[in-house]
Amino acid sequence: MYEDVSEVLLTEEQIQQRVRELAEQISADYRGKDLLLVCVLKGGILFLTDLMRQLEIPHAIDFMAISSYGAGTESSGVVRILMDLNTSIEGKNVLIVEDIVDTGHTLDYILRNLSTRRPASLKVCALLNKPSRRQVDVPIHYVGFDIPNKFVIGYGLDFGEKYRNLPFVGVLKPEFYR
Ligand code: IMP
Image (tube, rainbow, N blue to C red; front, top):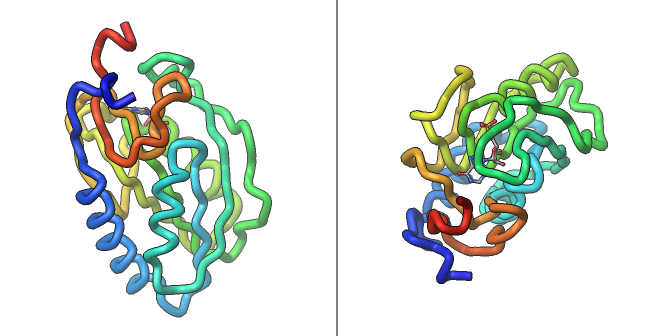
């Protein structure tokens, strides 16, 4: 699998260090509050579990699955909920845990949808951000890394459901998605 990667953008050490920093910041910001982490499946799963282990405050978790991409590397722009939350978020401090914000369509949809459910607060933590690709302006309160406009895989991110288990974030060789 490693031979399909042309470049390692973020090493395992860099990611783990940044996750620790984010967890420290989130722990300080939400101390004494009722925190619910909402993980956006499937890409956010590795980030969620690493972040949880570093958080120093009690918190609950829930999951949502959204579809915005087909099998390729371009967003279709059409977003829909494949799996909704199990619990009510009314009155809770919700922190959305996302793998990557690219065009912003997915996050925009999630924010609009969840804000109608009257959470006490609604914020976003995204491991990766591709600012140059943004089509919709969305707030990201905690960002792991800003990355260039490259299609990345690993640490939860897939191409055709593969590569999610890589412990680093890398760039897929172009011959694999042409
Ligand atoms: P957006 O709606 O364009 O912001 O895309 C958000 C979703 O597209 C993310 O949650 C990912 O699942 C997927 N995505 C965007 N960029 C990449 C990438 O570089 N590699 C893998 N998946 C990506």
